[in-house]
Amino acid sequence: MMPHGLTAEAGFGAPLITRNMDETQTIEKAREGDTEAFRILFDKHKGFVWNVAVRMSGDTDEAEDIAQDVFVSAWKNLPAFRGGSSFSTWIYRITVNRVLNGARKKNLAMELKDEAARIAGPEIFIKDNPAAQTEKDDAEKTLMTILSRLSPERRIAVILREIEGLSYEEIAEATGAPVGTVRSRIARGRNDLAQIAGEMERENEGH
Image 1 (cartoon, rainbow, N blue to C red):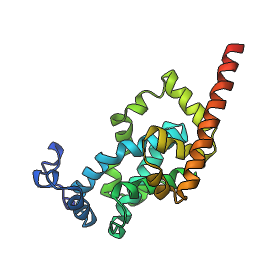
Image 2 (spheres, rainbow, N blue to C red):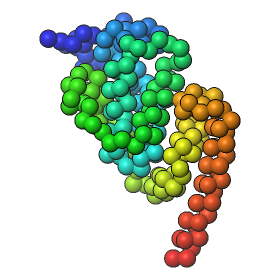
Image 3 (cartoon, rainbow, N blue to C red):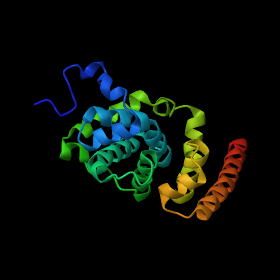
């Protein structure tokens, strides 16, 4: 039986009626189990999730696991989403919780065998995200090496602010930390980055 919201023509993109909905309508349809609506939300937010996952983990395999887990979790918990915050902030929070808990993937896609897992299959993140393709570039590798030497709390704060461009308030809501703590983590993270970069430069000069 064709899953609700999918048609035989789904390979040509979401139906026109779905593509023309605003985000509030799209979220509501996804909450009702419409997989095409969920695909639209996935396409909109997958870049953010992937970039945070790969830069927090420093490993594309683990980043694939993290990113897939985030969207499977979002699909499972959509009925509980009440719009108290924006959908973006909700996704930020799920992503932050997943990357900070450090847990390895628990084969959620294989266990659930639902449409969310197929929509958010790991190969999609590699194919559609430039960060995966540039991981071997020296600049990207250097960045991930430097970031990996920050504490997880400072690393995620720096990534969200300096790379993803979130406001202090958005980071506070995503991480559950007060704005003052967020500002402190970012400031200290910047100082740490400058110190680490300096040390790496001196090490390279020594060679």
